[in-house]
Image (tube, rainbow, N blue to C red; front, side, top):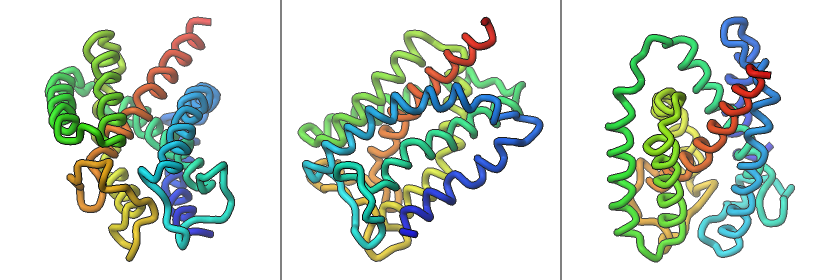
Length: 229
């Protein structure tokens, strides 16, 4: 088993086991969840294939398996399924255990911080493919769901996204070289601004937002349709 593979197993082990907890009943949402994950993950896999081909990022051979989809190690493909699974699990747990939390008060400060920092990153990173693509898309999604549409679930998503930053820092830290001599996933310095959280490019926060927000939107839509049918 590759190191990247072990990271993915550890990422999913807790959420998958606790999915059958009698309180949250997360397993009852599996159908809606995977219908939400697969179309967005497909887009990200195409994005990943193109960026890997152009060496905007890549993978250290010592830490990945030899099984590949085009130019992506199988662990990277699984990332786009397992990480959203774990994060939507956190989202559902937060909603269940903190039903009286006034999430609306977090929305405006979060949006202003996320968008403001993003604008600074775009200005500093003009010409950087990763910075411009991830940050611009992340900002647009926040503007659509959090500012324009003002979805009633968006406040819970913000809280869950902030909570998920803790495992995010652990998992992405390992992937970007916090505990290894070489990073499992490396980034071209030509396409990031160079600001890092430990070893994690700050663009990764916007990349995760771009992955998780549309998945959550589809997930909530499917759940609503299921309740009304």
